[in-house]
Image (cartoon, rainbow, N blue to C red):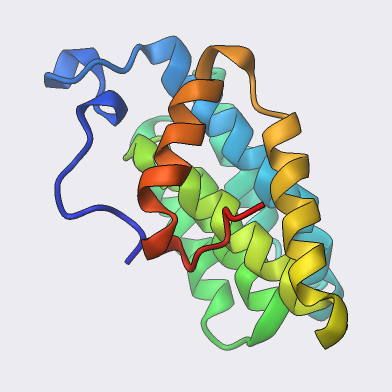
Amino acid sequence: MILPKVRDPRFVTIRRGGSLTDADHHLLALWAADCAEHVLPLFEAARPEDPRPRRAIEHARAWVRGEVGMMEARAAGGHAMGAARALRGAPRHAAYAAGQAAVVAHVAAHELGAAAYAIKAARAAAPPDESQASGRRECRRQRDRLPEAIRALVLDDQRMRNEICWSVFDC
């Protein structure tokens, strides 16, 4: 479980009583999709015939554009996570990253799930003696791509949830 027991109101939309704007929710979804897409080739190399993780990432972006509803994006995320279940290592983590990216439409705090699983995928794909360095590079790449409007929010979220996200944000 990568979500905190108590929901952070900064990741709850204003219309639901939190402080997250729709614009920032969309930026979180796009950043999560970027994190997942970066490691997607690790899944596709193992299961080139399975489109579910790629579709999940596409649905995350389509939700931002208003082309699909939250329920459809969330369902695509569930299907991507289903693609992960029979796998191990980097392909599994990459599929989970895609699934987490799509469900940001439903719960914005899943943004760290996409990022954390992408880091785990990068670690798992590297030789054992390069695993930690590969994870740190992926973490830094993700941080470099954070939109300024959500940068402080995401970095604080990483600090607060690092322990429940396998300490992958120590970069």
